[in-house]
Amino acid sequence: MAEKNDKYGKELDLAVRIVHMACSLCQKVQQSLVSAASGHVLAKDDDSPVTIADWSVQATVSWLLSEFLEGWSVSIVAEEDVQTLSKPEAASLLSAVVNTVNECLAEAPKYGLQCPKKVLGTSQILEAISRCNSTGGPTGRHWVLDPVDGTLGFLRGDQYAVALGFLEDGKLVLGVLGCPNYPMRKELLNYNHQCNQIKPTSPPSSDIWQKGCVMYARRGTGQAWMQPLIHGDTKFEWPNSATLLQASPVDDPSLATFCEPVEKANSNHLFTEGLVNSIGLKNRPMRVHSMVKYAAIARGDAEVYIKFARSGYKEKIWDHAAGVVIVEEAGGVVTDAGGRPLDFSRGLYLEGLDRGIVACSGPILHDKIIGAVYASWDSSNL
Ligand SMILES: Nc1ncnc2c1ncn2[C@@H]1O[C@H](COP(=O)(O)OS(=O)(=O)O)[C@@H](OP(=O)(O)O)[C@H]1O
Ligand SMILES: [Mg+2]
Ligand SMILES: [Mg+2]
Ligand SMILES: [Mg+2]
Image (cartoon, rainbow, N blue to C red; front, side):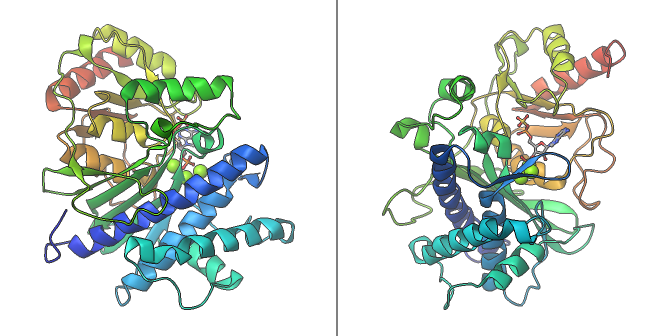
């Protein structure tokens, strides 16, 4: 962990504590959603799901960043807004969000942070959510938040992530990724998804499933770290509990494992199948929701992550920021399909992205995949 005087040390320390809190919030909401088999799930305009957890995490993170970075006029780029939540028919949803946020903030001392002097009211919570309306850009400091990435995975009792990145002058400098359902063994990561597809209402039950982690990295250190999630009455303690992450040394495609989004609608599975076959990648794909795919590369559980969204879809910065810096500092390489670094300096979207995203555990494998993309592209139906 960064010493307190190091650049961004204060921000990283705070962000890690906040993400631990957010993960704990999500675990509680996920348990209650899965056991109620219904609950507060809404569809957004683009038909994607949003839950109590998405809004509650955004409110909690926003409140904590503003409180502890006072005077920095905190700028936050985040996924959710308050439109749906402010409608009269969403009153019970809003009250659940208010309770969830206050319960989470009351636990702040366990994470070494102060809780609010008074319980936060509805308007303060709506304000905290809507304050995250920054559009980022090439100058200044901006936090980039995906409160729940992989909401679909979250609803299935499967993989999801809380992702918090930090940009300065258009450059990604910090990434913190909370993975509350990240299992301890790689085989379980794959099995977890399949298991929950068959039995979507069964939450992971044994300790091994529930053991989550928080990963973090600071640009330029060449180090990425992982801590176990805080459970029960354990007090937050670090840097003692952190272990160094190292991306996989495998550079032979025939030995590599690749991961990709679960949903065909989010990435072209047919194209990646042709692509990985063409370079002799034999292992079957690990289909995992959310930025846990970046976490798997950083931790050495997989070697390649490929995402080719349908043409016309614009990738949002909060779906990648935290994961990219963690993979890069763990020794990996992340670019677009043309081999260029992702550009976080141009607002809400990864503008100028060439076709898709390719993240690899190292440069040799990355070169091979990019070469294969060029070779496969013309014959593809994208
Ligand atoms: N049509 C389309 N194409 C590409 N990407 C899309 C699309 N729609 C949504 N999204 C974004 O995908 C985020 C989830 O990515 P995943 O890799 O987890 O996808 S998947 O659930 O495994 O299929 C998801 O993030 P969350 O909304 O935070 O869950 C979306 O931002
Ligand atoms: Mg997302
Ligand atoms: Mg999200
Ligand atoms: Mg979403």
